[in-house]
Amino acid sequence: MPKGGRKGGHKGRARQYTSPEEIDAQLQAEKQKAKEEEEEEEGGDGATGEPKKKEKSLDSDESEEEEDEDYQPKHKGVEGMIDIENPNRVAQTAKKVTQIDMESPRELSRREREEIEKQKAKERYMKMHLAGKTEQAKADLARLAIIRKQREEAAKKKEEERKAKDDATSTGKRLQSLSLNK
Image 1 (tube, rainbow, N blue to C red):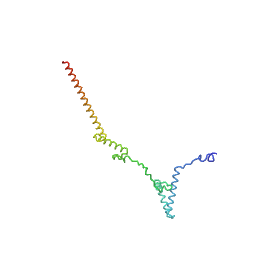
Image 2 (cartoon, helix red, strand yellow):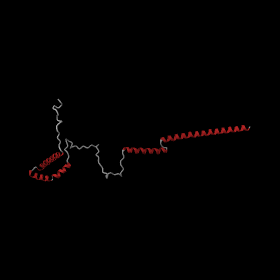
Image 3 (cartoon, rainbow, N blue to C red):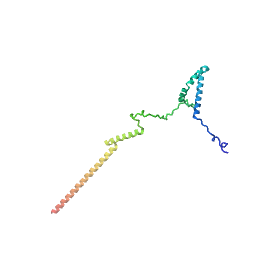
């Protein structure tokens, strides 16, 4: 025997749906009852209560429209007493094109601000580097000075060697010329 006892169970039954017109009619009937109860509480006397009902019935079309606009559903439990708003939820407000102010400067995001600060810091460093005020620039200048001295010494040494060679060749030629003359 299948679960649930009988074959088919409740799931195969035809479903009944309430149409929107029926729901509206029920809501209006509830509103009408609520109005009548309020009038009975206010009037109390049968003679004075009836003219108020007649006056209300003349303006009932207008008041029903107003109530439809201001209709708020009944809250369950303490939901109606406590007004809770989530501070983390940001309400999206749509702005019209005419309300947008293009002339005022827009606020930069954190990443954009950091990027601009990086660029400015890099420019400042390059200016100081070119002026020779940074440690790296001082080290570079010292290295360049050492290289210049080495190159000058090498140039002097070459010059001396060339002079020595020239002197040697010139003295050798003189010796040859002297030996030929004898």
